[in-house]
Image 1 (cartoon, helix red, strand yellow):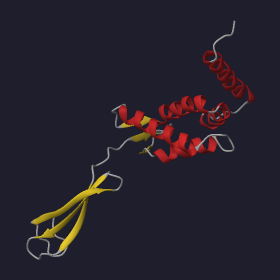
Image 2 (cartoon, helix red, strand yellow; image 1 turned 90 degrees about the vertical axis):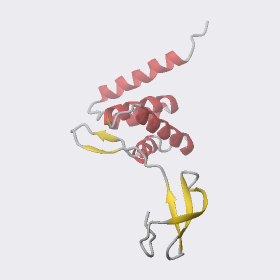
Image 3 (tube, helix red, strand yellow; image 1 turned 120 degrees about the horizontal axis):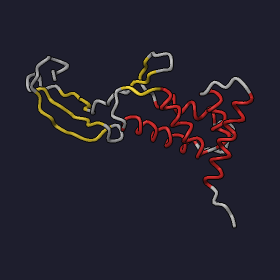
Image 4 (cartoon, one colour; image 1 turned 90 degrees about the horizontal axis):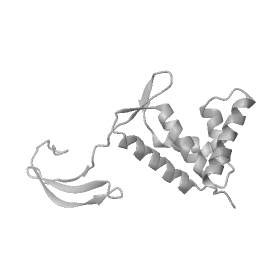
Length: 159
């Protein structure tokens, strides 16, 4: 690293401490030639994950897009922002855990639908109607039937 003042590459580190919620290290340095002090930040390079869309184009994965879709589906529903944030983070982690540089948008959408089914059934139906591009009432009926089947699996039969 070069001194921002004189361009010399030799410096000494005067102080190091965590920064940015411990995601980085802040270092106070002093140039060995001009003796001027400056600050640097060191942070790990984050891996990149690309989403392959239905039409074949690719874009970088953004957790915020997952979050936005879930917030829209949960509008006026009793679902906390914290739960949605935790869910979006979990889905992001799952995508990175696949250890693939690219993941299909359908894989992400299916994970969101699965998560929403456990969070709020109305939000699940809302998300599914947009994600699956429903064009008829029959498709709504099918997704509602899926919700009913999921309810039966979760609630043990009473004797």
